[in-house]
Length: 215
Image (cartoon, rainbow, N blue to C red; front, side, top):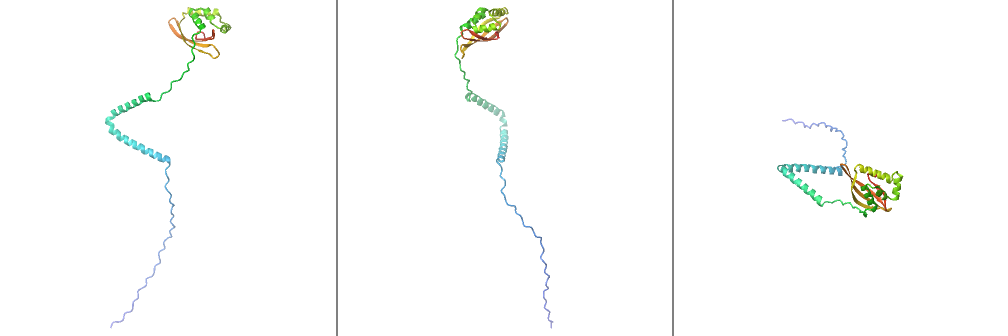
């Protein structure tokens, strides 16, 4: 007979302690913020840079395509520029012509005509008599007289001076009375010719003479 077996019990395994994990610090999340927007100047600069790049690109492509016709293109551009310039000259804005106010012109004065006749003929009497009393007094005060005037014009005649022609430019009235008369006088000396300006101020008679010879 078989001997009865003893009841076997499972061997209890020792329980292992759970592993100790280090304590993780809590995760910190950075709050979300929208990306910074570009300023107007940055947008303008980027746009301009893009346009320049595109312009250079298309210019290079167009230049390659038109290279065989470069001379013809230059001539066409020059003609278009010339036509545009001529059109601007014809129809463009033009500066207004300056406006001049013309004074009332006076005819030559009688006493001035007498002075001119005396100067051409080297006659001091005619010249002196055409002076007004105030102008004669002024001449005398400065050491001039009819005699010194005759001596002066005699010296001019000996030097070969000739009063060839008197061109009357015109005369204007003065506010204080009388008028101012303008002449261009052609004079000649041996081998020389000149045009001198004479300005006479006269009322009934000459009150002032302005000329290179008188000065």
